[in-house]
Length: 434
Image (cartoon, rainbow, N blue to C red; front, side):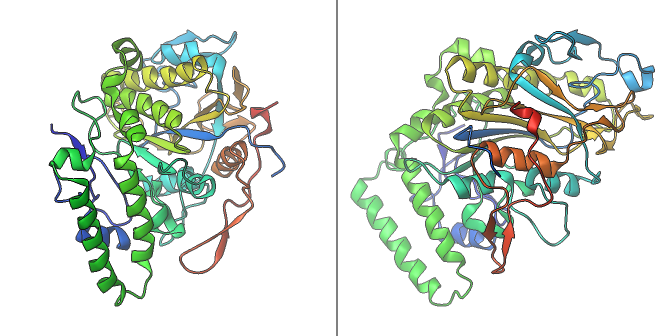
């Protein structure tokens, strides 16, 4: 694997800036840019956010909300384990998170009606009910839009890549889509190099290439009535500034991190992505989503969950992230949230898996003024429905925004010209801070 570079993600409206291999010149081509172009009363507690997103739907029964007294086809194969909070037990599949529970506020009663992937992803990532044909901006995109960039770094990053199209900016416009990190942070050669150093070209030659690119853009802009190129200009300038930044390149160079710390997070893609997220927060990025795919376990559930890149990676990486931030004095100023699109069915199916289930499942908050060591809400004896304190995705989004000092009721512009509230029909989850 060669040194990492800017790349353009193939699907319209999605952004990426690192990959293995070499692109011509600056690594920012006009065709790539054109594809891009198509494409509450609470004081702020946190200045940055890390969202850990498991795409596909994590089973709550086998992690944060075990049902040890249920029948075997509901209980499953996992046992339970005591956490660092007396009286709270997790499945024994997540021992590191059990020890980190003193920092966590686990919500066991999240509920929504969308049990299909598109609907579940859209609702959990935006706080809006799924509307076919209209994409609302993701929480990360809104946070990036509202908090803005710091020191030339992008306001919203996805590590390592976008596992869901609903991580993008929707009606805010493509200029607010995330920078997505290509490659695998667990690869030994994962790093960012200055484009000029990598290509062996001079700064003057690099500047001439940028000038030529701007000149060609002007020709296209004369026939572009959509304004898409204007939004891409903003992205391109920010992208080039980042790749030239020594601070940014240092943050991405995990080879600078000692082996003990890297081992603590786990030598997996998810674990090292969590480590990279912590370093990006230290470098000043306001919002990072750590995105992990392949959590849709309809069959062979337990062999798949126990695989090293699945529950062991999530357990070690997420717990290390929270504990490391706490030890570095960064947890109070960094909101960390685990999200997934829905849970899994109470009963194990005939092919030894669990299917989609959105009526009750779990998420977790830590840091950013959140009171750790508590469970909010509860599901019933089968983990099928909220038993008390139901929490909606709208409430989750509202709470994330509020803790970051973003007004959930504020209206933001859309590409259609309408102004649309950040989130509707929601309330702050008061137990998080009381």
